[in-house]
Image (tube, rainbow, N blue to C red; front, side):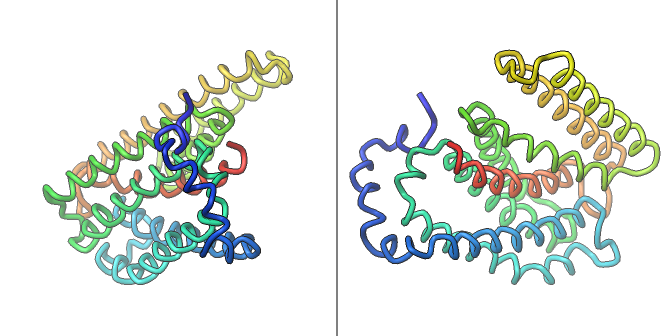
Length: 276
């Protein structure tokens, strides 16, 4: 069994098949590429605002301004990005419904989008407006968002033809930690990351025949787990060493990391819809 929408909602097949022949799908379809550009620009706007806001919650980036000031500066753009993503997504989805209906990547994207909205509006924005002071509602929203994100990553990771896309999330996480880490932690982290890159290159290019996919696939998956563990370990170290700060607790700062990466997961899953 796959994890495409058709597997969860088989009764919708006939209705989905008609969507690109009726309004608005039939109107949007000839201009699909233009609407897709609008969708990508909205994601870029949203992602940029999320990175600025959540880096500040972690304690980096625009540190000359308080989290609440950054939130006020990005709030309108964040709303615009969300509206743009949802509106353009619905329109291009209606004109390409049958493709999305059979796509596991689309399932991963929708779970990621739900998680991103929960973490952004339930965690990042209220946390920033309170200058890092969390409460029970924020923690509940954080747990809910993390569970949805975990579901998205799971579908992304086990789906056929789309699991290489998880590397986008790992790569982004690695870069964020490299930017945030300081002093000796950054040196040790970067050295470990470099060693893993070299080890993967040697293993998958020299030790294993690049055409031997039966061995390459499990090897690359194993390396993905190792990279993820190294990056998560560095994040945990950075959060623990910071303790409680003006930006919040280690838990709330960890949620800020997640709020950045969940949008990257959503964008990456959208990219892989073309493949599965």
